[in-house]
Length: 90
Image 1 (cartoon, helix red, strand yellow):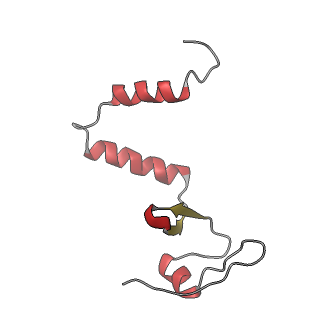
Image 2 (cartoon, helix red, strand yellow):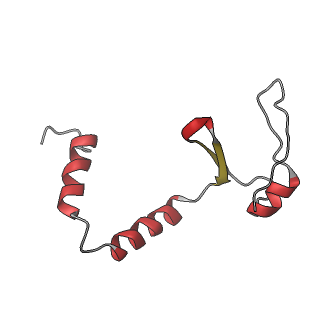
């Protein structure tokens, strides 16, 4: 079930997340959230996951799709995208 609640943007660009939505997402004061701009200018607000939580999800995905994922190709793509991390010209 979707929830629609109006809110206003302050002069500082702040928006209070309505209580109904905070409760539904389990958000608490001080908790980090992330905003994701999607297709058609939609915005998704979701609890921000720690790096370890995201890494665990990646690990699970790789384990679930072990036969479909070419780890060597992923490494090659990462190397092309990031270049050498130690400053050398390997």
